[in-house]
Amino acid sequence: MAKMPVSITVNGQRYEREVDPRLLLSDFIRHEIGLTGTHVGCENGACGVCAVLINGKTGLSCLAFAVQCDGDEIETIESLGTPSDLHPIQEAFWENHGLQCGFCTPAMVLTAHELLSRNASPSRAEIIEAIGGNLCRCTGYQTIVDSIEQAAEQMRAGKEEAA
Amino acid sequence: MKPSAFEYVRATSVDDAISALSQHGDEARLLAGGQSLIAMMNTRLAEPKVLVDIGRLSDLSYIRVDGDALSIGALTTHNTVLQSAEVAAHCPLVSAAYANVAHHTVRNRGTLGGNLCHNDPASEMPLVASLLDAELVLRGSGGERRVAAEDFFVDTFHTAAHADEILTEIRFARQGAGEGWAFEVVSQLKGDYAIVAAGCRFAMVDGVCRGVRLGFVGAGPAIKRVAAAETALEGQPVNGATIAAVAEAAVGAVDPHADMHADVQYKLDLVQALSERVLKQAASRAV
View (tube, helix red, strand yellow):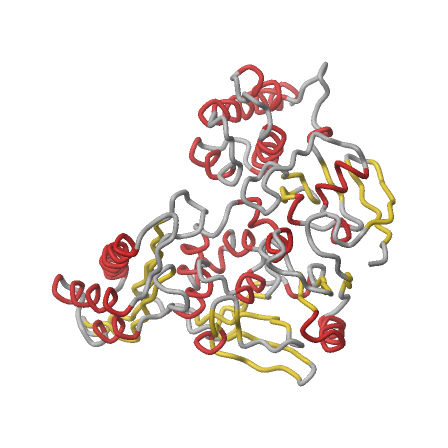
């Protein structure tokens, strides 16, 4: 099939490429742009590890074609922090042992990021609900929930300080 | 790349989508949120030659009260429906069932219309549409028609929509004030597919149930509403004896299949237990 032009903004930078219609957004991000922080697990919507932000809301990048996202704004884990300047959510995951093998972590952090942007004080139940679609095969869920709780606290404190 | 190659067409209007469907016939599939279709394409259970993307038709995303109906545009996302105060006020059964539909990230992109057209036997929404006497508004090259939910869901992954038709709107009957209703799900993890789910609604008139709607998910490939169970409650009060009679009628009428989560007997036990649970809960809500 003929390739199609797409223009997709990823982490604030616009990328213009000619792609096969069947190219998944996850493969566009990893193979066309070379951002490998977005992980790929089951590739049929069951594991949640490939979640990215699509126009500000989490979406599974294995359940979207790049051509569908023409004109969209995507944010991946690379947008959040740097090794020397971690985002508060990343900081909290580090401090609370919120990751073991790290495979589910990018999607967990982005899902937490979306949750905290619409609900600054989620209950533990709301956190569990929000990450319900993200599998951690190390089964480190308790510390992931701890991490998100602490991140919420720190981000609220940060906001108060700024104000 | 996992899916088979296909030609991609982005529709700019409903008419545009209909003309693309008319042109490509059975080889084309509509792409809405893609949360079921793309998963099936990635495993090559679906290999459409042409994908007509209707995901940007924002005029098909709305929720509004329209007389006795609550009208929802087919491309309204699951999360938009779940979070809608209007849906909770006029069709609380929809909101209650939606709390169990998939996980947050999938609900961000998946759409009500896409879900209904997919007609997955494990999905809650086709049952909810049946319980709420929904009408499905279809538009095609031959014009617009309305199909009752009972006629729309033909069989597993199969609906009454023609190859050149697009579902544009779902019209749920608004639930009456004081109506009894309940929706209960048993699944391994909230948001995962139901092992068995049950829903019911009825009006309580002079102490007896009228207009009974009762059905299940996971109780048989094409089973939704169960007439024998509805009949057992019609015109009856809700008490220990009638609850037992309804549950017995339901267990006798369903046809669950064993899968990796549960064998047939376990599912029959769930049909029994959930029948009792939804009737008690619905009765406690009825005025």
